[in-house]
Length: 280
Image (cartoon, rainbow, N blue to C red; front, top):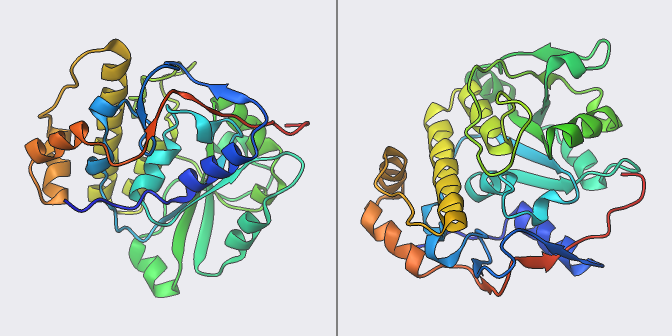
């Protein structure tokens, strides 16, 4: 089986933050042996299950400083599957110059994905994306900016990010209840980062890719919960079958990957942390 590269934006960001860490970041399960790529327990490693999505859509993750280090972060799942995924650490003090360059790139039409009621006066708001034929005709692609953090953090990031103020808001009008079960949320309708990305893919007319990203998220959630509860992971679901069909192999063959994880082994969940800049 040929495995995909794990050298993507979120992994690189996590590595950079670890290298300049000043104190350890200790997640739950500090004695758990984890795959260094998918950050799951070795027996439920999902490195072989990652679909490669070909939709001409880009994602820019503006991440709260602690998010790249959390094993429960779902922004990483987007980067696992969508090659055109960019990741930046949010700072109230300054905007990452590379993010500014990305927003100025004429190949992209940027949208910030956030509820319309938080927009600035006069800031354009859309509930749908133009059909992909429109982007092809104009020679552009949609770039979806997602604020990756808790809901409280995301509101602060949106409010205190001048680079977002002039961008159109994509306000999702979805009745979908979140399936995220790894952290508590104050409201069920608040979608986690990867669910937002899947909803955006569907709006852009890429329903099959949206389904596969949702399936990968479902496997990730089940694997994490099975590891946490020290139980056998549920397999053989429709999500497993759709991903296996997409990857051109059998579910049984992919399940064998769990016994031979692709990534390096982390001795514990205690990964280097970061010194959060003052004024965050």
